[in-house]
Length: 345
Image (cartoon, rainbow, N blue to C red; front, side, top):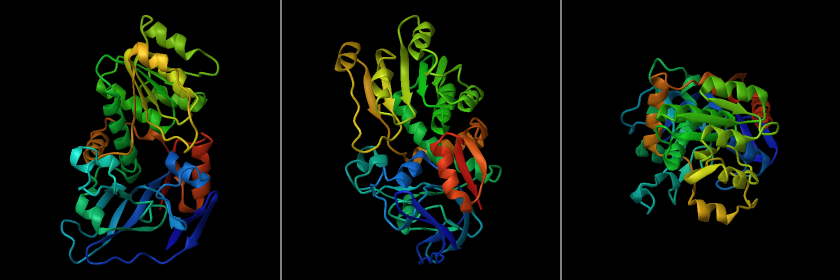
């Protein structure tokens, strides 16, 4: 089979490799669609290394059709259309037992410890099946729609951490695919006003389609002035950072009203630090938190939102890529030319 094999920073090769074999407790999935995540870009550049093996097949956003089923597997059949949650919790550690399976101390993941979706086939290990990480996709949803279930589920986790409520003024920093998912989820949550900050023209345009009330170029106009004018000088209830740029953390915190919440949703490069004025936190009593991955419950809720038509997936994806275009798909996400680039097989 064909697979994009990752050998290290900036070294990804499309190769002919052996098709995975499964044992009696596993299934083999024929990958129909995979998607490039911002995390994949960071892995490709060598900026994210935890859990990443070399050589290996990366890619953790994937959907497909079950091609083979192990003799001891129950509930799954050849031909089933499925999505795969990449993060596999152990179910036994302190975090799993206390409602934080997304940060499981012993987590493993498809695309990390196990080969991922930038290939024609992917083996789903027993631990993933037993944890319920393989989910059947409704027939009326296309694979191109379903492939965003995993990142949307992560955004649902972020919205919960940020505590977006009805009537809130929400600022989203970064108008990439993740940012536009947050725009849509904030709208569904009942936000009164959603302000998107994004310097790239086509992403601002898509942001308005996604439901943002304002889409501002922060290099030309004052984001702070807009937020203050929209909130009678108070500041935003929630700021969601959908881009991992450390120097924006402090200015993002200053956009909040007293008691507001800043959620650091995007991943940041390991070792790159950010300065923040502690008085902003102290005197304004703001909350700063982060988001990591998703829970299985988030995935099911995410799939339901897509299935019910409440999420516009077209505005957050860019199609037209094959497995042979994997490096271009990664580059287009990195430089902002594309949204979430979709690889169809």
